[in-house]
Length: 266
Image 1 (cartoon, rainbow, N blue to C red):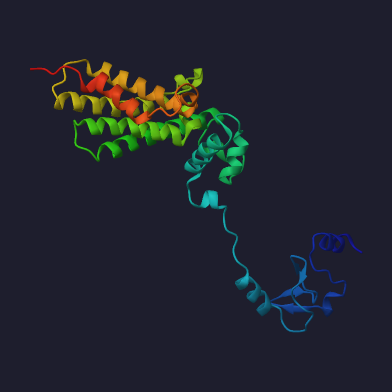
Image 2 (cartoon, rainbow, N blue to C red; image 1 turned 90 degrees about the vertical axis):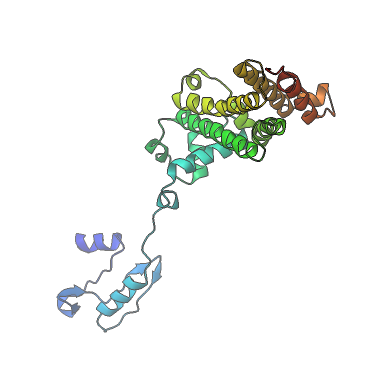
């Protein structure tokens, strides 16, 4: 067998060792009567009919390849952040690799570098998204109550607690100030914006009720208490030292002492 004929067979191309004069000619091209294989199946039987029509039929019935879904919808960045957020919840704060996040998002291991420098950069974006989600939930919950009311302040605390208990691993990650994360502009900006919602609600209450006190200090005190309660409940500490404690009553009592009972300006 000539080298060219061997090469055509090795590549899965049709081979016909007959003289060219015995092969059917269509549109000026010599086409052998042997038919190609597709996915291991012999799709055309030997025939003396012209092959051009059959070729057109095959082309029309063969679906065009589609791009990977992860790239088709153009949401690679958000898909990777969502995948990493799920993995934090399923496996812990750092017990997964960047490759695991790629697999969960259904993308190649090279895909993250379109948007993120490394795994730490991806985690910074997850943490930033967590702060943004928490701030949005606090605002939505507070909006259900009149500005400057006790019920509105209490709802802010309840929403904070619910967020921390719904995603405890992410909640811990948000406040785990590693050297890299504490200097991340993205994380600091989103964290400060989140805390600003607490400051705003306390300021509204103090203004509406003529509270005589340091608004920022009171806001920090309230946040410190609610954050501590959230961490202790999430870690199961109250079950050991104070089983059956009423967490809502605990936070309400703290709010009364730290804010609601403060003296009023004349």
